[in-house]
Each structure stands twice: as C-alpha cells, then as structure tokens.
Length: 168
Image (cartoon, rainbow, N blue to C red):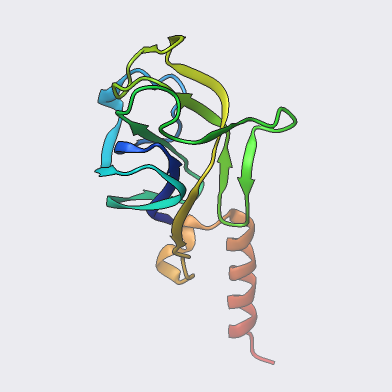
C-alpha cells in the first residue's frame, strides 16, 4: 500500500482544503458527497512549495487508485499553480511505486462549485504542480498471505517448498 502524508503546492493559496475519493475523480468532480476532506488550513501566498500535512493520510491499496482534489477558497485563478497537460501522455509522473495522471484545475472559490471566473469552473487536461510525501508498505510473503500474490508467484513458492522437502 501507499500512504500519502502530505501534499505541497504553491500559488496565492489562501484557505486550502484537500479531499480524496476512491479510485478516480472522473465523474465525481461536482459531487462533494463522494469525497472525504483530509486537510483544511489557511496559507499565505508562496512562490515556493508549501507542505500541507494531512489530518488523515490517504491510503491507497496495491493495484488501486485515488482521486485527490486540492482546493482554495481564494477568488480568481492564481490560488493554486497547475500546468497544462502534455498531450503525448495522460501520465504526469511515474515510478515503481505509483503513477500520477493528469487531471483538472478548479477555478471556483466554492469547493466543487460549477461556476468559475470564465464560465465553467473545471479546466480539463491540467497537471499537478507540487509534491507528495508518501511511503510504501510492502507485503512480505508468508503462508497466510500467499493467496494475495499473483498465481505465477504462488506456483514458484509451491515449487520451492516442494524442493525444500525433497530428500536427496
């Protein structure tokens, strides 16, 4: 599993809230009831990344995903810095532990609000500009958890155990 403990952003900031939802934000961007607030605090403007330690860490199980929404109640489009999505890929960042996909920018001062300064509040094809502090917890094999590993791995374990018991 991955545990996200803090998220850092920069910009005009102001009153910031951070929200999460299981799997993806897709189709949930206007529905506050599908989200859980994990952070709320006031921040002065900063041209440098400001770490925001989450009240409740975001825990993502192996093979799962999460939608994360960073919102400012400040008016205008300067509160949180984002970037335009690179159109060659939907992936903004990837390593062995996780993948961050492009999302949307939200320009309303009201969380999940539909109206922004130029009409619709949501701007598609935007990328997160910031950082996340996270840790990975790996699952160590033992007989009780063998069933959660891939079938190919289970077969290798079975072969190794049979070899171990084999008399030479």
